[in-house]
Length: 257
Image (tube, rainbow, N blue to C red; front, side):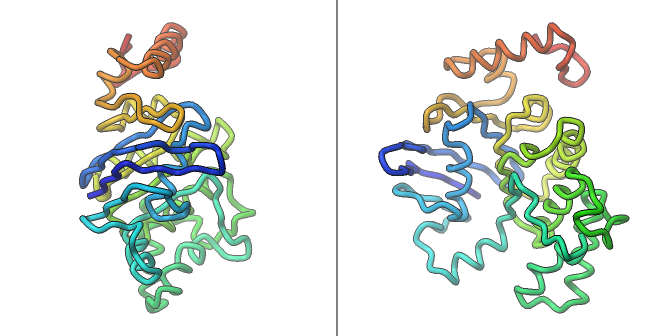
């Protein structure tokens, strides 16, 4: 479904992404991890050209997004949902109206857009807050509305750029639960940038570790986090072992170390 080939991005003299290649199959959940500043967010934002790449290709269903004109890009973006770090809700609109807005702007009749918005809010457990404005919702609830906004287009691919980064720790779990449920039903492929190790362990089909703009290692969680071959993988293993020893991390109710 998604194939990134030899992707490159530079900001002035700084190399953000260097020769990154990865694939995401239909229905697959791939988690992209690594230290801050390693190029994770830059990589994911090139997929729908929120950031323009300097080289390489991004193939979505066989078509190179980087070569599309404005209208072609607009059409393909309907099939790619994007959840940001910030909620980006319009404060004067209700949750339902925020979810409907993109559909209506795309030409969908208002009643159909309302129906799809309600269904998307139901999927994230926010149907009872449909008439609430952002000031009447917690950060976790606002992010769930942001997720519903992406889901309303029924995308084939969901991109998540550290969706819990702006949340207080106590609110993180409610967003992760929604993400886990979406991954379970596999209605969309998912490429997730996150620092949340428990989420990666429970949900990822494959984990990709980045460092200094390059992919250092990838594989299933039990390989990458238990028998890593890269330096960054070994650092994650040490972190998991430390957390496990302090009774903070389990996998399917069992210790993994």
